[in-house]
Image (cartoon, rainbow over all chains, first blue to last red; front, side, top):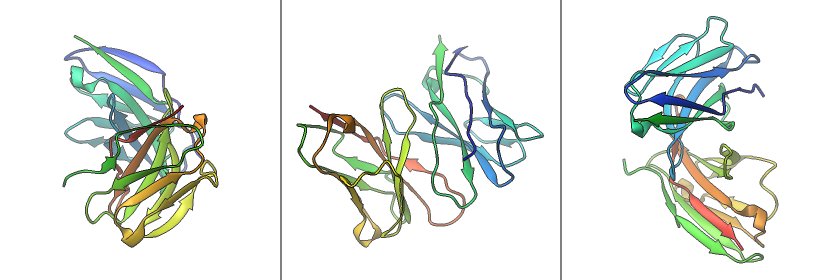
Length: 110
Length: 114
């Protein structure tokens, strides 16, 4: 299975943009890149996903490198409520086993 | 859309006892998943249902674990003869039967085995 590598932790200041990196050098052509986040005492929450092109939604933006070996989740203006563990996951097309790594713990400072 | 509901939120049991958790997925979601999460780690896949059929099981799911989804609606996860190593958060997720797989998670059941 293709794996992802994320920093263990990152810090950000409130109201500033945050760029959360993810490396997935062994990604295959049919792997989708998914991002979830987990707030304290809650289950994971879907954030965004993409295949090749950059994606935007109300929560975040996903920037995918041209060679697809890395991606970046962008929170445009971090708030205290964005403090969470962010998981970058590769999902094989038609495979229902989403494999989470340890993720990046984001701390947002006021 | 009331979200994925899990019951109970917390369960404390003694080693050797059996425990059962329940998950109510989002209405009309055909797919249901169970994950286990220990402190500081990401969720680990346990098993997956398409309607009432259990289609995939992780090797993490030992013979003490059994999951069911009768009638393709709610699901139960039972752990027999619990061990201290079973202490974890058990998460349930559901997703629609068609289209891309976006998982909707419940808040989990925190199991503590004493």
